[in-house]
Length: 142
Image 1: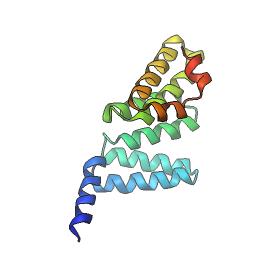
Image 2: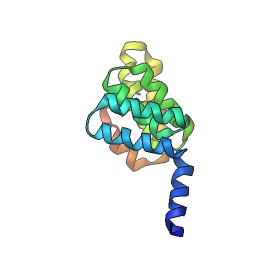
Image 3: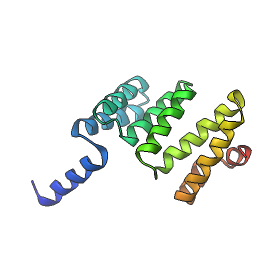
Image 4: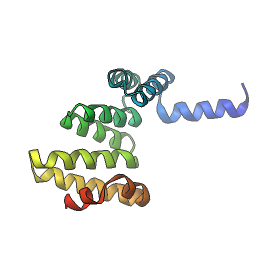
């Protein structure tokens, strides 16, 4: 094995956890691209069994849950992603969208949470956050 390959593999496993978790995560991403949500969900669960702090698995699990209308679980998954990786802009954006969508059903605290997440994402990456949240959602939440 070349030194460059070994270093790259070491960096990857350090960032994303144990090797089996990475395999499960990749399977989940492939299943999600293929719109096989059940397989994606199982893969993300397997990833989290191996590496409970894997921010990518939490964030993608939230995406799958969102497609099934499981709002409270989406927020928990996105929150776990931001706890695991505090600068994970995409997870803040997803939390903002899920919070905004739940606000009419459960109250204004969710709208405030959405605004806070948009502000955090904007502070971390202004261009990415602006591209991800439609202006009417960002403005309507406030």
